Length: 116
Length: 116
Image (cartoon, rainbow over the protein chains, first blue to last red):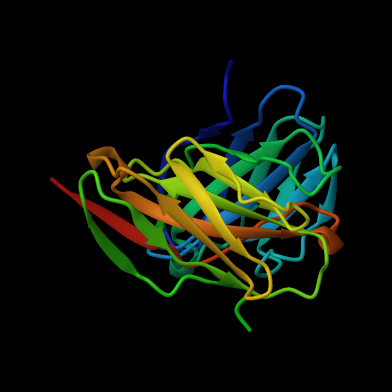
């Protein structure tokens, strides 16, 4: 079956511009996560959705970052007034739920964002 | 304080030999899960193995096993009979039950190079 997909795979933008990154989770997965991975580092949590609502956005670095999941499936991560420090790979993951301590997250291929 | 510590930035192993990748963790939760992911140069995160904090036996998945020492808070990954395709970045991650979100906390990773 189809895995988690993310578009675009690469995005190059100029400082100050607005960008949108899209994540299409595995069908039926209610939990959706965004992570950011800087070069040579492990992924860092940004935001978690359970269904349509953002249940935990504690990882968003500042108010330039926002994410939505209006119908409980596809999610969009939005970054306003991009800065060079936003350059990273943005990973999306989905899982069936959060009910037990074991809950495998399936990751998408990521979007590599480069801010010039 | 770091929640997940991977002290080996890079490791080398000869093909067909076994290798251990270290991971220590820090949590006050009694219930938590520990994960290992592989990230090849292509960038996707591949789930390898899971260990629950209440699991009495060490997890095994094919050539992967997890050496879980709860009192020492360590969860080392053992790869037996290394193959060239095992060359990749490896991440240890933890999920704490108290977070109620399932978000993963990752270490900084270890780069494994398998020599022919």
